[in-house]
Length: 255
Image 1 (spheres, rainbow, N blue to C red):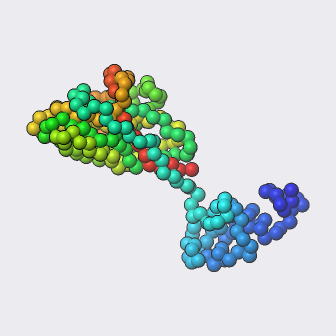
Image 2 (image 1 turned 90 degrees about the vertical axis):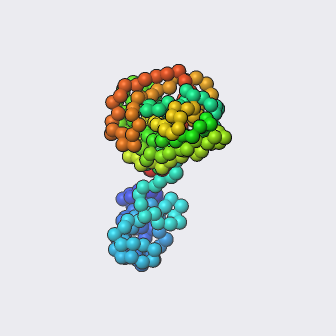
Image 3 (image 1 turned 180 degrees about the vertical axis):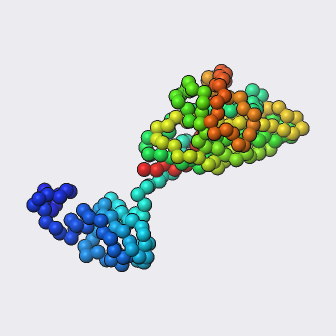
């Protein structure tokens, strides 16, 4: 293939373009900015000074379109699991479980090597006509399978505690919250969950969250409401025939 090819051969010639493509350039920022020939796709340069759009002690890689230098070898893209559905009931007393983690299971796509999550949500909350407050925490656990068979579930994401105040007109209040997460490898199975506790003048009155429209085997764990859960939850799984909560998670995927 010679000089027009993609790999070195014994008959190859040492043209500037070939050297740019096949070697790592080390020099100051002005030298990188004014290479003898146009930079080549995939070329790697290390800058020893700051200037001309480059910073010292950084490695730059020419992108596939040969239009710019990338300053990092990790590329991130926004990831969203999908939209939230609306509640199908505004007066479903059975939805008002407290001190229980209610789970919804997903498999993270293998599109990216790993993910960092930044937000979880469950859509609007609909209240019965009473003056109450609902405190909620979102979280995400690693699970072994869908449905899970092992009760120990390591915590990989958590929100801070937040409060939703009842609306007498049954109007919806948005419930998307920022979360902190550990890196999660693509293809991992996650159990998204929420836990809540209620207070006010009439604790235990009805509220409703978005959920599936048909019965489903719902997995849950009993847990006293806390914003500082254990690193690994060891509570046994419980099940009920009910509606699956409609939860979502979003963040960034990294190559």
